Amino acid sequence: MKKCEKRSECPVSRTLDILGDKWTLLIIRDIVFKGFRFYNEFLETGEGIATNILSDRLKMLESKGILISKKYELQKTKKVYLLTEEGIGLIPILLEMLVWGQKFDDTLLIPGEKIGIMDEMIKRIENDREAFLQELIGAVKSFDTENYC
Amino acid sequence: MKKCEKRSECPVSRTLDILGDKWTLLIIRDIVFKGFRFYNEFLETGEGIATNILSDRLKMLESKGILISKKYELQKTKKVYLLTEEGIGLIPILLEMLVWGQKFDDTLLIPGEKIGIMDEMIKRIENDREAFLQELIGAVKSFDTENYC
Image (tube, rainbow over all chains, first blue to last red; front, side, top):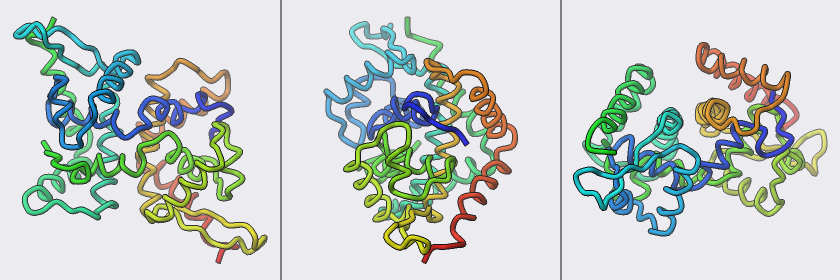
C-alpha cells in the first residue's frame, strides 16, 4: 500500500528508527505500568539495563520530545522523567506488544497469580480498550501535577 | 502493575527480545503492506537492509515460528516466506507504529498523494480498526493458497 523510498518516508520505519531496540520501550513501560520516574528506578528494573545504555536512551528520548526531565522539588539533586504527549502516544504500541508477548511467546509462563493479572489486562485491552487506555493515561498524567518544576 | 524479575517474565520484554531491532518489523511490514514474499523483494525494499542482516532476521523469524518458508512451485529454486498465525498476530503492533510515526514523528512528511493515502489508513485504524485489520489479515492469508508447497 505504502511505498517507502527511503527509510524515513515510512511511518513504521520512522517509529523503528527511534524505538527499534530492546531497551527504549522498556523505559516507557516502566513509566506507564510501574509508575517509575527516577533514573535509579529505571536502572533497577528487572531486565538489568546497563547505566550507559540507560543514560543514552534517556537523552535520546528527551531529544526526541518523548520524555521531559524536571527537577524533583522534594530532593533537588534528583531529576524526574515524565512522558510528553508524544510519549503518552506510545502506550497503544506497548499494549499490543503486551498482548502479543502473552499470547504467542509463552515459552516462559508466569506462575499462579501473575498469569491472572496479565490475563485480566489482556481481556481489558481486547474488550475494554479505550477505557483501559484512558485509565493508563490518567495515571501517567497524575504524576505530572505535583512536586516537579 | 506487573513486576518483571527477569527479562523474559514480562510479555512486553519478551516481545522486544524478538522484535527489538530496526529491521525485523520492516520485514513483517513488507509482507503485510506490500505483499512481498521473496528474499530479493525484502532486499530491495527502500530502507536498504544488508544481506547478512536480512538472512539472519529471516532465519530468526522462522525459528520463532513467525514466518514459514516454502518452495515456490513456479520457480523451484526460490523460497517464499509466509506469515504464520503468530506472525499475523503482529499486525496490530505495526498499525500502532504506523499511527505513532505518522502523528508524532512528522520530521519528513510525504508530499502530495502519499499523505492522503497515509491519512486514510490512520482514519481507518482509528475509526474502523477491526474491519481494516481483518482486510489486512485476509490479504495476507490469500497469498497462502496457491503455488507453494
